[in-house]
Length: 287
Image (cartoon, rainbow, N blue to C red):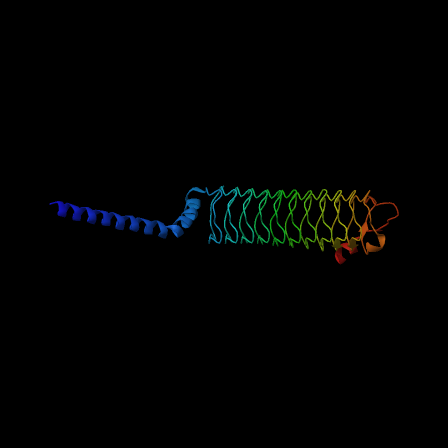
């Protein structure tokens, strides 16, 4: 009987070890499932703050008011997603694909977004204050009423962007390309814009007061009613630029020889020694 009991005990222990190993194997195999569960949790609850969603395939995702603050979404595919009202404050969105994504009213403040693809995305009324958007693709992006105060947009592409009423105050925008962009009534107060490209930009009523526009290139641009008081314009080119009602009083570095074909009217305020021809309908057609 003793021998039978001992044998049974050994078999029981062996069985326990086998069961334990089976459990460990299941846990090890669950690795990818855990990563997937973050995606499922986001879809089910809209909550995934601080989650690691790098390289995830989330194209076409629809989650309103998603909570993704501090999440890692580096190189994630979120093309054509709808994340209206999302909280992405401090999120890692470097090289993330957000083409045609709806981020209306989203909070992307202080986000790490270098090289992000935001082509044709909707960011109206969104907050991108303090975000790192260096080298970002923002071609034809909707930034109407967006807040980009203090953001880093060096070398970003905003060609044909619609940014009327947006606030770029104190932003770093050296070398930014705003060709054919609509920045009507936008704020660039104290913004750094050396060597920026404003070819055919519509900046009616925009505020560039105290901005650094040294070396900026304005060609066939419309600055009607714009405020450039106190702006730095060393080496800036204003070729065929419309300055009707614009305020350039106190602007420094402005060179009349580099205002080729530019025009204004009686309400245009210019620094001492600078004169402009009066705009005509023909100037508008040529522009």
